[in-house]
Image (cartoon, rainbow, N blue to C red; front, side, top):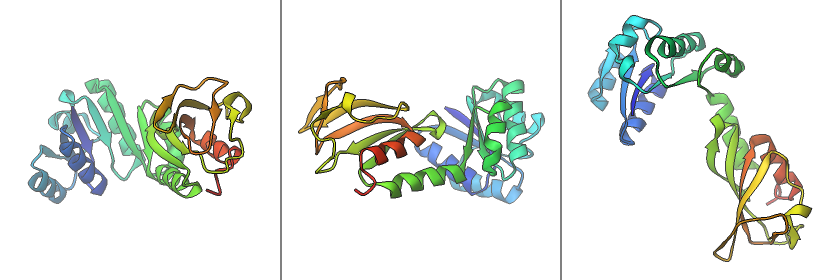
Length: 221
C-alpha cells in the first residue's frame, strides 16, 4: 500500500520505517529541509520538502497515487486541513490524523478525518490495560481503539466457577467469543459453564473491560 506521511518528525520517521519494514511503500512530506535529507538518506524512500497543508505540495509528494494519508505534524489544525485536502482533492481512501490535544479528536472525526489518533488517550488505555489486572490481556485493538479483543485467564478459586454464562454478570458492551479448556475450543452458549483455568476470548468496549474485571473479581489477580 502506498502511504503519504505528512510530518517528518520522530513520529513520522518511525511510522515510515515501520511501514517500510512491513512491505508498504511510504513517502514523506516535510517542511524542514534537514529532516527531509535525513529521512531520504536513512530510509531511501521518496521525500518531498514542502507544506503538507497545500494542494500543490501534496500533489508534488504523490498524494494522488496513495491509498492512505497520515498527518502527524505537531499542529492539529494542519493535520485536519491536510486530511480534508487529501479526501476532497485527491480522493484518498483513508486519512489518519495525529491529535495533539485529545479534546480535538471528536471534532476532527466530525470534520471528515477517518481516524483521529490521540497518543495521550492511547497511552492511557495501554496503561489501564497493563496495570488493572494480569488476568486480562489485550489481543487486538478494534474500532479505532474504542474496543478490544481480550483474553481472560480465569483464575483459580473463580467465584463463578461452574456457573453458566447466562448466570454470570456480563456487560452489554461485551461478547464472549470462545472458551478454551484443556486445549479444547468451546463455542459458548448461554448454558456453557465457565471454570477456573479457562481462557475466555471476548470483544469488549474499553469501559466494559473494567466492568468485567470488577464483576468477575479479576482486579486482584
